[in-house]
Length: 192
Image 1 (tube, rainbow, N blue to C red):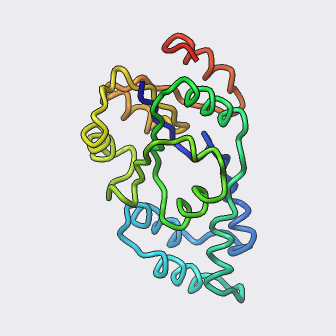
Image 2 (image 1 turned 180 degrees about the vertical axis):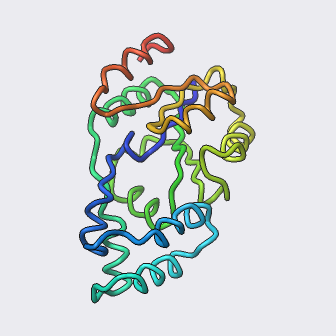
């Protein structure tokens, strides 16, 4: 069976305030947030993204400082990692299914051992589309030969879950505070 896993607040908890405190102590300018979607669609290079951040901060930082702060937002989420290991040990195919960017993906793929259990990744920066937009889902269905009605999908955002349901995936809106709810839901679908 194929499984789709979002990353942020599913496999890794996100701590964007740590980035804000290091780079924008007075608050992140809206211009920076407006770059997030184009950057995650691969329309802006890493260099251009970091250079733009530096033009908006009053901090005396290098590109390396900025990249380090940008990557220092991830925290492990062991309960979901245990589920991933259980599913993989049963022979299931696991696919990362996430809006992300090159700096983040290079970092977390190399830093966290949970990602060795994944067979494929479907990242927005490589696809040129972001969730919850339809092309993100349709390209995955085609590329991996997915049968949505037989494909469980974990994501934390309601708009992404709604899009997944539109395409027929078996969806669970994940909340790390209620991990047991995910296990209970999954137990009705597959023996793990």
